[in-house]
Length: 375
Image (cartoon, rainbow, N blue to C red; front, side, top):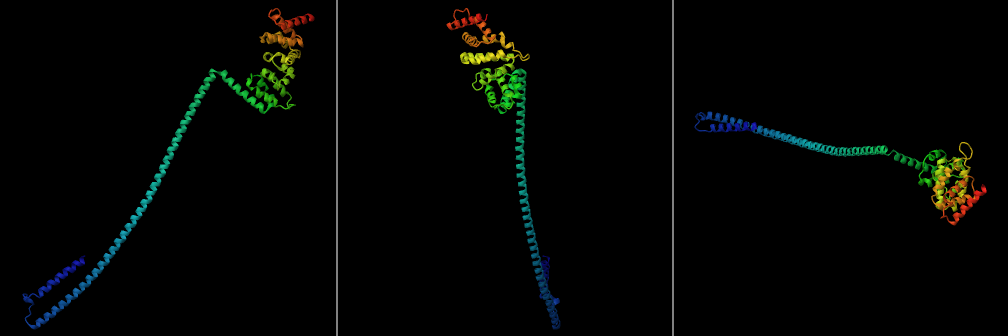
């Protein structure tokens, strides 16, 4: 720009010079003679020539300045373009960086969102688990408190439940291993077994092969049948014969109390089914009672031939017909002592009653006749 200013100033000075040289009023430039004019003209020509050269040089200089300016403008334009390209590149880089940063931020945001959701879910599950655990603990506490109350208020009832559970286990065990009766007999003999377990017990007994690998196992079953299930077992078609054949051993091993209870049950069932249908079984039972050996002395036991036992059996038959039917069986095949006990009790209660049937009166006469013959 400053080159242009210099050029303009130079042109203004040149124009002013030529105007002063051609002005007629300028007396200093008017020659007085021809020689001086020629010299002056030469000088002017020289000045003009010099001026032209200077103008030419100035033009060249201006052209050079123009070219230089164009070159510089081009350089500056190139620099501007390079700068713009650099800026564009930087902007693209920044845009890419921002995109990458945005993707990273989005990924991190999604990750934290998922992580936060997962943590919340786990926290909810943990809270639910804790609540469930607390509820379970509370339930256990309530059940424990309730059980403690039941134990304190009903110890006998709890014992019965435990006892029945144990009996169920033992019966299931015997069904799987029938010979285990050898080990479990004492536990069963010391308890009252519910009647609904009879079928399981019988199934275990029937599953023992003959001859038994353990000789005492069948006898232990038969003793428990008599002790625990007299009504069912003594009249069960599948096992009653086995029991009849073993009355002696059964009664020898039974306690007096067990004989009382089982005998009353036995004759009560005979009364229900009819004495006449079980006369042979009744005689075998009385023979076993008569021949029972005392567990300590090896002699015949006084208890099984005592008035106490047979009065109990007789009195358990609260029906007159049943008592006559039982005595009738006993006098057909008399058993020492025992037959006498029943005939005496029958005469005592019914000998002088006017409402006896002809059959009953005839039986009373027969008893009197037997008594006279004995005397």
